[in-house]
Image (tube, rainbow, N blue to C red; front, side, top):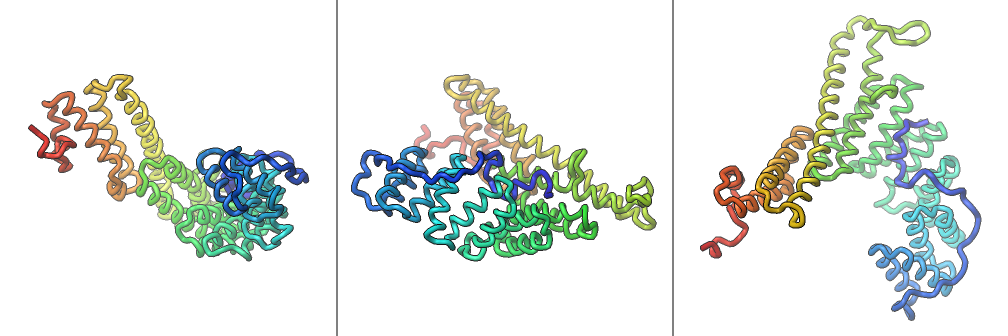
Length: 390
């Protein structure tokens, strides 16, 4: 079985699903107001717009009405299934997908959709069957996703060579797709228990995944999901007990073993320097994970301080505004320490700091710290055009 975090890379469906049934959706729902007279294609686009604006129930009613008037309409069935998946109604979604496959057995979206549902229900072999079909007919932009999901399914049934092969192809199709690289790393990690020789490949791919996760944080320093992914990348390398990360497994390989295979506290001859280098890397990751927690704490602090200076709270408190400006700067500095100076390229936090300092000067025109900050970053002391200043 794959590590406990493998579901992150497989798909985004919630794993706790209802028991799948066989009922086919029936009944013609009345169309929502303002859509009478639309042809099926127009109705699908209208339903798509309703769903995108959060009017899911109306979108489904329109699609049911459309399918009542045009049974088997492929795009209506696919959209209905996609909406139901997003609403956690996987049973009914599967029925809509099956309606499409009855008409178009090689439909990519339907095969992929049912494959995802079987994955979420942990029916790995059924998932393999549909994902194999999806992979064969996938459009260029979706090939990596189909291969990634197929790799995960093969790993779950114990066919690790196929899992490795398809995960490598998924990465080849989309080198920047972090989910595909994650699946490859997780499969290699799962293989370590069977084949310790996989350690070098597992370590190389895990470090590559970590580097790309750090780049994602540098591009979007305020993206909590990117930060969580980075923390997960560190955990793959160095996991807290009772789990064992890839670097920890590598470290254990430098020690002598008893006849039963258990490592003892005695290094193999000539492995002292190698072991020391790994220990230093593990120590570095401990520090980096602490920085991740600190960055998260600073982001939480910003949310609270920004609330504190809203008009209905205490918007004229200069000290609060000073603390907010300082926290913006601290967060960007900490993020740069975590992922590198590329984090300074994002202007979101500096612009917020500039706005905070201008607000300070509105409340306290003689505030020297705010004035010095604005001058240091080359920003005017006010957001008003120079000609408007008396």
